[in-house]
Every structure is written in structure tokens, then in C-alpha cells.
Length: 275
Image (cartoon, rainbow, N blue to C red; front, side):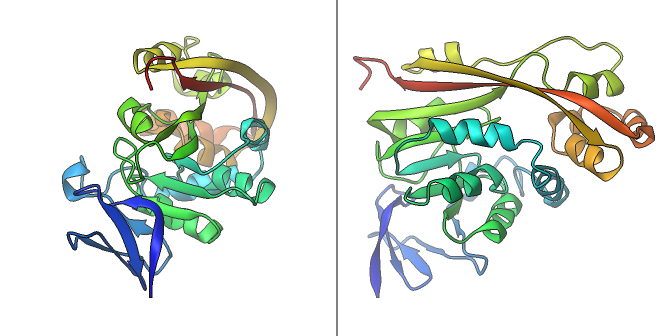
């Protein structure tokens, strides 16, 4: 029995995909299977920069363990308060923590989660089957042009071309990025020289035709127990790839660490004249 793909397009030819059982096919007969876990893999080989791009199994496990501790729950709540309409696309959804909580709080929303990491999407499928999960490139989201009312992007590199393709003319993009003091105390343990640093998406988004209409800062302090919780936090950050094993081992000696959480949420809309 055929059914509409609800806005999915073929990553090869950008024609609509239709489901026939667990197989998805476009008019040119490019076909894609639904994996046993429930996700659809729409990531083409020539869109990969490595054999298995994105988070690996260990990083997914670390993210799941840490996020399930609820330490980042205030970030999730702040995000959810900004979301009003769907269909919604979470670009760089990872293992689905934020996406799942959004669906739980706003079950009426039609939500798609997308990530380049197959291992992350497998983890997302374990969280819930109420969200459509895709392995795909955020630079080329396989959805109908300008069909998404709300796009969310948390701690993920911006891909303006993909945002422009997917976002409806009157839609919104919500981003979450780190502020200058984020995890400063962790950084002071693993680096000799630590500077306050952050990323703001405002200028890059403006260059792509999106204007910031709202900015919210969220800061709070938490105490993370030593051992597995602290190591899990470290393993889900980019610092995992930047420091030597000897530096990382210093975290093993800490009983607990009080950290500052510092993030900034932005809402963007298309600039007039760029539609």
C-alpha cells in the first residue's frame, strides 16, 4: 500500500518520495529502506566526508548518559517555550534528547529529527517512535523546499544553504549555542590557558538572509558528580578531540565539579526581500 512521504524528497533527484511498505521510492525509482530500528537513511555516499560521519557509538552513549541525568533540562525547557508551530525539523538532532522532550511537551507537533550520524539516529529511535528520524545531511535536508515552519539547531554548525531550502517563507529558525562561560570550570581542568569564548550565529545568519528577532541568555550552575557523569560530559563535548589522554585523566581524580552552564538562544526569520 502506497502512502505519501509527508514531504520527503529523494536526495539524488529531489523528487517526492513515496512509501511502499518499508521501502521509499521516487518516480525515477531511486529507493531507500526503512531500517529495522525505524529510521530512514537518506545520506548519499558522496555526501559523506568519512565512512561513518558524526558521533560514534561511544559518543552517543556518553551523550545519552549525561543528558538523561537532566542537568541540561533547563536548556530543553527554554527551547520548548520558544517553539509554537510545526512541521518542525531538528537539524543535528543527535540521539534525540531535546527532540523527544519537545514531542512530549507538544505532542500535536509533526516533528522530524535529522542527523548525519547513523549511530546517533539509532539512539534516537530507542527514545521514541513518535518522531520521524532521518540519517541525512543538514546541508541538504531531504524535505520539500520551504515546507518546514520551525527549524531548530542546537550546538550544531550552521548550514545556511540547507536552512534556506527547508524553511517556509514565514517560518522561524531557533538556534542554541554556547556562551563565553559555558563549562569554564571543566576547561580550567583540562587546559593550561583558558579564555572566555563563544559563538554567535547572528552575523553568519544575516549573510544568509536571516535576521535575529529574539535573543535569550540562559545561565545556571550545577554540580556534576565525579566518575562516569563527569567523564560522560567530557566525552560529549568537542574538547574530547582537543586534549591529550593525560589531560583527560585529570578528570578521573575529581570527586565533583561545579560548572557554569551558559547558553544563548536565538530566533531568526527571513529578511524582507530575501524570500
